[in-house]
Image 1 (cartoon, rainbow, N blue to C red):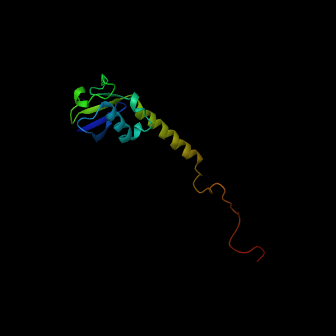
Image 2: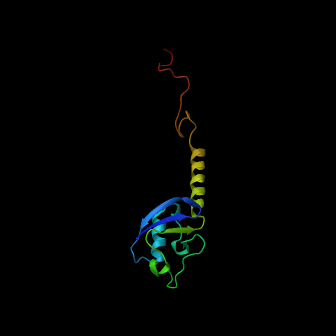
Image 3: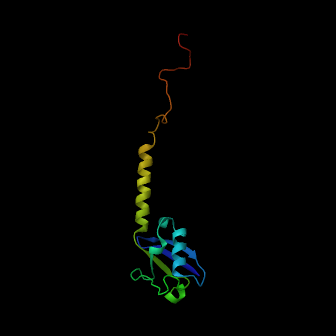
Length: 126
């Protein structure tokens, strides 16, 4: 079954995935964590999915209920509720800022490089 996953905090980005027809809610959450880079490191067990962006999909079977029994059909858009994308964006922005702060300035020698001022390629005293 082909589904589209969207993060509620990044509604313009669509992640297309394919799951088995009998896949459970837990299996979809695990697949979402592995398929969507913004969800890397997220707890699949605590993830909330929704068909309408308001009500979480709930299963009486503790997450083992097949998606079809929860009303999920092929072609549906399933929303990942929460601010996962904004957390990933904040982490990548912080990492970029750290990298920029530690990078040498343009034209500056790399850390540990030795420079000699005033050398012209001739031996001293010639």
